[in-house]
Each structure stands twice: as structure tokens, then as C-alpha cells.
Image 1 (cartoon, helix red, strand yellow):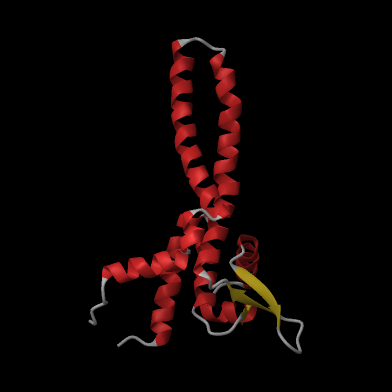
Image 2 (cartoon, helix red, strand yellow):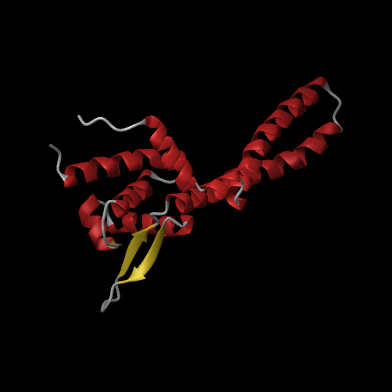
Length: 180
């Protein structure tokens, strides 16, 4: 049977692998996984010890987690040290990730596409027409994803039902977990 420490290490490694799907570095995702696996906020030194990372890597990761809204800084009582508390509200964490990805990726792409498409309208060459049609398809797809993200962030159906309820329903639909 695996110990809590073994499971923690596996979880942190898995979380690090998943980080690239959110748009964060594996190190940042590993630090977030480490923080999630702890019952109390962790100082940078505790993260360094627990993860075997450099102080600089942990510092950069914690800064990125704060920027993403995935960790809050707290003062250690009676000390000048800071401790990091992970965002554990799944709904809030996902909203923060979606908002950051939207700002970093979809907004700039749509801005450029909306600038380029009218310019391509003036060029009547077959090459420009094919290129414009392809950019319009990209704009349509990214625009749809962007509007879904906006709806999610502004509280469309998910806010009314609550992400926690949807996750609970999905878990219930899978049925009881079998013991191994």
C-alpha cells in the first residue's frame, strides 16, 4: 500500500505534466500540486525542501501562481517569511485559468484577425480570397470559444448551476468507485 508521501509525489509529478495544458510551466504546476497536497500554507523554503527545486525556481513559480490567482501570500506569524496558500475552490481556480488563457491567447488572436480581414477584402486575388476564407474560419472557431469563455466567466449556465454541482453530477454519473 502506498504511503501519503508516495501518493503526494506522484500527484505532484502528474500535476506538473498537466501544467502545459493550462499554459503554465511544469515547475509552476508542480509547486501548485505540492501546495494542494499540504494541509497548511507552505513557505518557499518548505517548497524547496519538498520538491527538490532551486529557491529561484520556487520563487518564480509562486509569483506565477499569484499572477494566475492560484495562490495567495500570507505572512508567517512572528516572522518576515511568506507562506503560500493554494486556491482550493475548483470553480474559482478554473475561472482564473480560463480568464488568463483568454487574455493571453484568444484576445490577441481575435484582435489581429479583425484587423487583417478587412485589409484582405481589398485584395481580389484568388490567393488573398483563399487566405481570407481560412482566416474567417479561424476567427469563427476562436470567436465561438471566446464567447463560451466569456459566458463562463460572466456566469452563464455554469454560474446558475454551479461548477461544483456539475462536477458532483458527473462524479455521481460514473457510479461508485471500485476498491482495488
